Length: 157
Length: 157
Figure: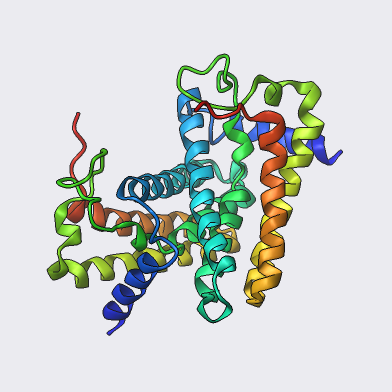
């Protein structure tokens, strides 16, 4: 039920605010979102790897809040028709399987978990405990990887 | 004093978490951040322009929170040496004036105002009043434009 609502919500989004977006724009916007999250992931990684006396709680929290904000911004709406590896006119690594309705339950489960782990990271980051943040950062990483492993084309070297 | 602290903070950032970033990576990350905010600005614009009975409060709030998160993520750290129009090895529209210490007071004032207007938009969006959101959205747009007008190269057609 939750999955169906998620799909419905994504479709409504596509049908309203994002109706005017071309497939290329969807790809560019979603890549920008992931890149923004990646930058902030990198900052958190550097902070959790740092010696305890060098740990910057504010920087870490702000990075976690940026990830939380983007993760909850409805990026599912940016996966419209014509935006997979086979049909897109610009480079993307989103495999056609991601757009196959038979995979929507899994896709939505992965997406929902990603949002939840991002929210949890922001909560833990607010607490300022470097070790706890490191642990939750690992959970968020796993949530990212779940989608990459299943639905993202391997990078060509 | 606040300006000096802002600069110091930005330099410390560059000196720690972002020390490993190349100029090209800084440019790519900051462009991703602005693009992510632009997508969310577009969604808010569509919502504030919509008839009152079509206004989606949740979508608008989530977009505002994404902007707030990115706006507060310390993007000043992504303006290191070699990332202006004259010295960068990839396309950027950040004019050398933005990197000139004599303009740091103005740059920091503009940056600070941008963050404040983004925070205010998220607060107003939480209230769900479409007209109030539209008004504050306009203020955020002005805050963006203040930097574009002064420090961004005009787009080549």
